[in-house]
Image (cartoon, rainbow, N blue to C red):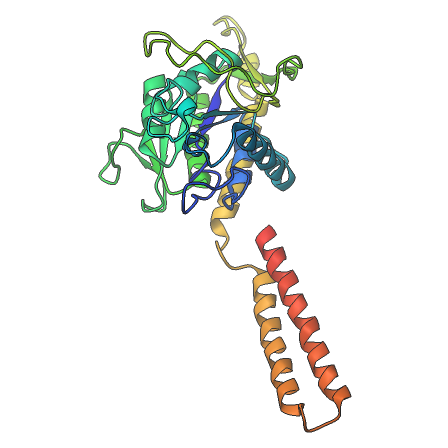
Length: 353
């Protein structure tokens, strides 16, 4: 059984659309790709689970959502070299305009249908998995499936807060964090705590599992009339069917006999598993990111200085216009244009950081 991180899409890895009809491939939140790469480094599968009422309202077809998810995965891979293993979406909405999709469904959050389907498709251990999202339906779906939950709330305190403290809030989430990057810190700390509780557990990478190449891009819809929650969805998910799966297998080492020498015991405790080294590296990276300013960067400072120079060139061109020859005016304007292009280049480089 594998462990997974179930992510909502809008508000978690992409920005919320003003009218709720934004294509899924646009608006990646800053830091989301790095967070996904960190979670994959911990050995989790990354699974996106999202309601798509825009399909039921006729704004998009299912093919548009599948294409948008493929583009989103491409952006994440290009940015940080990480990928989402599987996308699940639910096109049904009881108040939808399209009759075909105007119904409730076990996959529609807060129902846990998509999580249960992923459990069956990818052999996920839900009790050791996490659901991270910005809405109550994400937390409720996670609780119903037996997973641990993190509610993203940008109005919460800067640091993650465990449920039950004075700063925690509704829906019964295990933790509350302001964004996905802070949620990664929670998961990392919990993973370290679990490793400490089980010192004789060694994680070893297993051969990468390959997806079934005979699986079509989109599968047949699950029968919407089947009973719920007494019966779980039993068909393949609707959505992108080209996961990139990486796995880890936990090998339980046999306990040492009391008759073994002290030297052998000390040597056994000196063994550091690959997972422990990965955790340490991720923690160091998180501390480094936390110590750096959130908004300021050297390209931004250079852009501000160049912008002032561009303004000077523009004023100079305005002053010499009509008082000197055309060549002088052209030189001032050319200089201002060149500096303005440099400003744009610095701003683009700042966004890439």
